[in-house]
Image 1: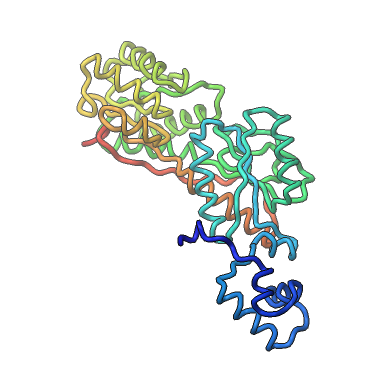
Image 2 (image 1 turned 90 degrees about the vertical axis):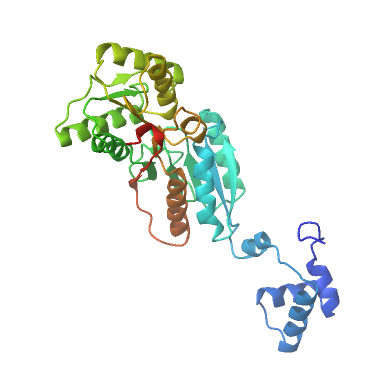
Length: 337
């Protein structure tokens, strides 16, 4: 019989097998109370013979612990929150801590409700995550448990937030394009109201300035979509016909750019090299050719946030501030030399 189909043995059965009361069996199994060594040994032997597995939640409650944390997200699609959550679970799993995930759907009232529900469940901490890095209001400065923010940041300086280093990731991308011999690099990105779009454009400009290179026109701000990628590429090719590389603010945009380049007879990467951002597999691998792109390392962001949370739960003094996790560059055919 498999571990999952086997009926769990109860402490009542252990007590009966050892010939003691349930209270005595509980004390023996939890190392509590004054018991004769013979009695304790008999209970432990019965538990081992029956393959008794104690309820970790019940044991934790005896010591004031629940071994659970809450994860509050507004990313219903899961594009960013699921990789962050998986990274967090990797870190939390070492301590056998479970995660309750709550989707707020960008509704502050719903968020407040979930926070209250999580506190009622006596979670030991809360991770707040989202789909954009814009500063957002803190979920509360007077909560009885520690809170960390991942893939988003709190407007409260005392809170601890972990976000990707968008500026460093952009500089990685442009340095790579310059290293392949490109000299006329354009930039097509998302809406200027987004912090990520502005920061990636800043990294684009900084990397070019660092190398003494000139951009192929000003950054083109638009939408996070393939359609905008097609439109942006059309604008770039008409205004900067000698462009030999394009750095895009997202993989979706880059995939649209690739379509227009092909339609205009520009070969990738022979005539125009192309780099995206996010390393979103359906887009990066579905593009023709597959995209070189910047990976946000979302799992590492989740792990860093969860590790910090575990440290605070364990008694390490809490420190606020924003931690920016390094991005990495994934090389594929769109920039092949």
